[in-house]
Amino acid sequence: MKSTKTLGHCQCCGREQAVLASGNMSKHGYEVINSGHGGWFNGVCTGDHFNPMEIDRTQTDLIVRQVLREVADLNKNADDYESGKKIVSAVSIGRRMLNGKRVEMFIPFLVASSYYQDRETETVVYNLRSKAKQGKQWSEQMTVIVNKYHGADLKTVVKAEPAAQIQKGEKRVSKSGKIMIAKYQDGARVYFSMEQGGFAGWLGSRAWRSLASV
Image (cartoon, rainbow, N blue to C red):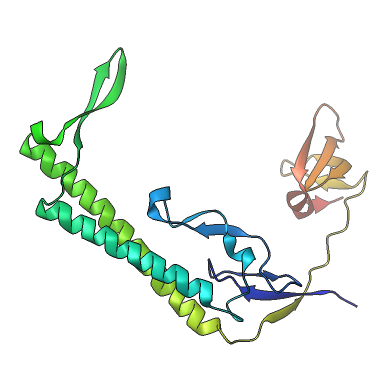
């Protein structure tokens, strides 16, 4: 009898992943984080702590609200810089030679010329608006996904049978037409020697299987 696995959609990233017997998502990539840490996604997703969104949407709705609050803050900061209510602390005046190296130089905003002040302000505003736009788009996408899948049935699929172990002595033809002889397989790597001698190496098992057999 073939084994099966259950699939559902992660509340934190919206991707379809395996669901464990506990009812929570399996571990997988992508964690939603705030812009203060450099982006909206990073590292390993925390969705494995929660049920799939087919069963529960609490965490998805919470993250969307958090991201939208940050979007509002980003746009508010952009407005403040545009209006002059806020100013940046320093502006870049380009790269200069210092101790034999080219380094980016900064001067205080208030002593910079209007050209440098305007350029630095425009850059800051652009970055804030772009970040806010990304967050708004992500929130809209996640809302569409959770509205589509919440309350739907989880998916059950047949697990793919693992590929047979590559045996010692198995031969394949390299792209250059030479005969490669398998020595052993270690995980996803197939270590081989050349029939003509002189060279040994390894290939990924998928790449090995894609070559013509002898």
